[in-house]
Image (tube, rainbow, N blue to C red):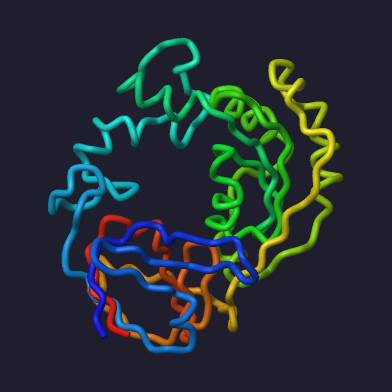
Length: 263
């Protein structure tokens, strides 16, 4: 059977194990049910996630024009410390920026390939941790806006990583760490403006991914270059599909591609 649509990040449910869904306009796939089945992926076009036009995807699922013009792709998305809605100052669209920036945000520690610090909206917990392939995570502070979360992350990344090594994450080369100990060690480095928001009593969240075989030497599939690929699905972790031949495909990094998936 062939499923067709525009790739967007997989939707998830926090269950044992994590449940994954690919959602298209007219179809959806429960990806967990495809484990141990052969899939064929074929690139058939592009569709910008903002304007919907068939334009080459530039970054984050957007064409070049939308990436530089639309508020959903502002610099503050990737660098929350640049947020200015709390000051009433617009970047691209103040009303949109208020709707996203002026809501509770979490600064957290997650362990995927290593312990790292990150920022997400409170409403995106634990989705953000699932997307990063973290097997454990814990909140540090809950602040009322994105700016405070951003300056806290900037302060803490002098003492802990802020990036995930995707190869180590997919190979499952991970060490269990006491995130409780980590957050207590980092507490003194939280900026004064955010110290009052430190979460005093907290527990780690543990996540279990549906992976039957981890790749020893993961090879990233470039569907834009290859055009098509076929393989047996043996795992899903983060936003990656893992295949038996050690090929891995990052759904999030390929948002905006229009594909046929033959099951």
